[in-house]
Image (cartoon, rainbow, N blue to C red):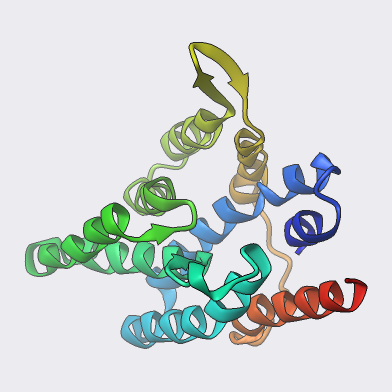
Length: 203
């Protein structure tokens, strides 16, 4: 939410976008946990699909302002294809072919975070039983976008601040906090609608 408020109303305040970089790695981790612990992974995938579709109109309006950019897909589609890849890997001998639509999505669709996002989710799953190796590998993956080359010149990219998510993911916590499972599904499109409405009022 902080990230989206920053993008919509305070694009010059970079710290808001930096804070926002922490979110996606936590979502990626939670998707893997969700796949492992849900009672029915097919219903889990269906929920992701439904709310991805619900979120698409307001995502396009917020980010691009026009429906002609409809095929630029919101982050819930990235999480959906990541969960689909995990579902395939959970019984790879029987479901290996399910990876094909995930690969096709990375190549042909405009996913938010794209291939990077899917790889992150798959890495969380593959290294789930090797905590220290997971922490090292995932920290490197998260830090990788920090440096980019533009016309042969090294520049820093604030996407690299996603590495700040690592302590939130790997620190041992047990808050006993319980929320309705639909809370964050609803929160994503709802907060985008609020930001869109406020933006229209201000304009």
